[in-house]
Length: 225
Image 1 (cartoon, one colour):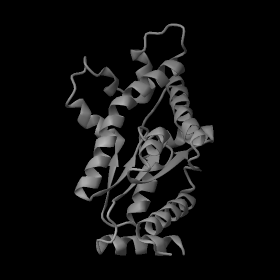
Image 2: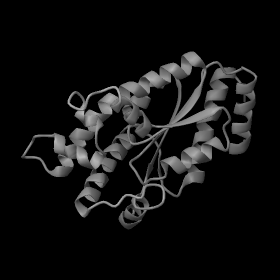
Image 3: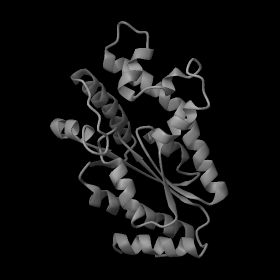
Image 4: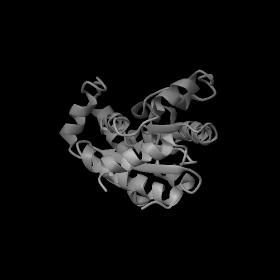
């Protein structure tokens, strides 16, 4: 069964109320790797699903935390090393520590959203650099989760993507290297846990993978072929 037919079948089953657990798709990777493009592509195939970038979640959390209580919420990943007082570490190493601190806060909110999804019967596409493999693995038995990750392995293409129309971000060479380090941190964990990692321009291949996982969910939920 092709991807379009799988998604169409899922939409039909969901519309008829034959699927009891909502579908949530989590798209990970750092900026400039095609996550938002893929999220938009998915909405062309899946109905009744909402896109929620984790960057928006972080922005909302900022309104609930004073900056002196949760300084890790204020700043992009390449700036977070400034919060780590470890002179023996490189700026990239400190940025990874700072990112993990920010992730710990945002991840709690991501988990709450997944709980909300189940209790309210709503479906979400969560995309952003705060989508990490360990969370998906931790919650896969509890929710209908599909996890997929994106990268841009070509350095010059990555630099171009970051400064392109979807981000318009001009980074210094030092900031760019920090972004690459944080991105490598995210992707290495995804590989460790066995998640597929697609290049920024492999949207169709990623779509086929998600469809294959949706087919498994359909079969598991309804015993359908």
